[in-house]
Length: 82
Ligand SMILES: [Zn+2]
Image (cartoon, rainbow, N blue to C red; front, side):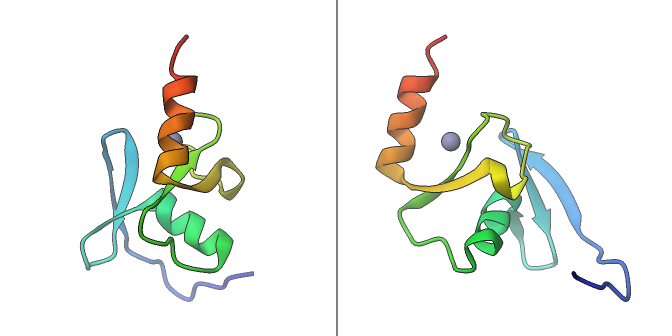
């Protein structure tokens, strides 16, 4: 488990429906950070993070999957029709 000796001061906001946070070095997509932590490695260029249940603000690791841009686009073009 993680132990925080002091509270981390993170600014957060929502952009385009997604959460972002700012630790002082600019705005970072929260879901990308969570996915990188889950995988234990950086997201490669050309890859994107998909929210499995379609809820953009649900950044639980179990809801995030890293896909190539092409695969990601294919999922959305199929799934959007309702
Ligand atoms: Zn997606």
